Length: 189
Image 1 (spheres, rainbow, N blue to C red):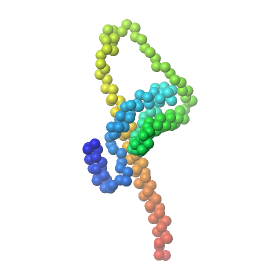
Image 2 (cartoon, rainbow, N blue to C red):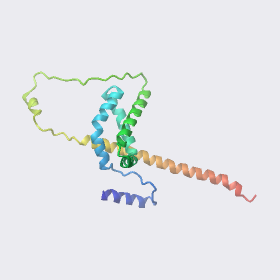
Image 3 (cartoon, rainbow, N blue to C red):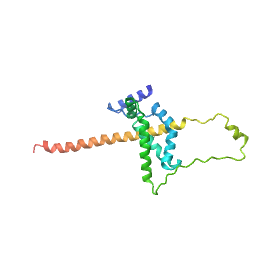
Image 4 (tube, helix red, strand yellow):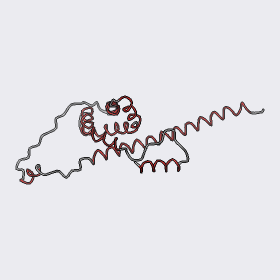
């Protein structure tokens, strides 16, 4: 937390101004990572259901996570005020919307069917494979949610940055046009 405050203070002083709404931090907050960790499995299954298979789910659910990351501060505030799961509701809403957009972008009509996951039975399994099921896993369980949260947060930061650049450029353009409109009216001739 101290590191994030120092980073934000350094960014504010180097950019030469104070922000009404400060920009997003470079790293995702811990509560966002926890949110992704809790919801990632269900999110992937729901995306697979909406797109018709796991292969296409990877095209949809990251976009929904990016949308949630971009609105994270507002969703967290709404949760504090209403005590409802605002982030979960928003995630589901954005997932359905992104899946609909994905279906519209497909060249061919997409038939959505719920597929069973195949069950594999290996004949002649070795003793080592049978005993491997008894051993503790060496898989890092929380590496994927942290990676997914970090990727979504990075994309949301980039989107927020370019939105801010567009707002500043639009404001500057409007000021130039307003100045150009006002100058002939002030002209002494």
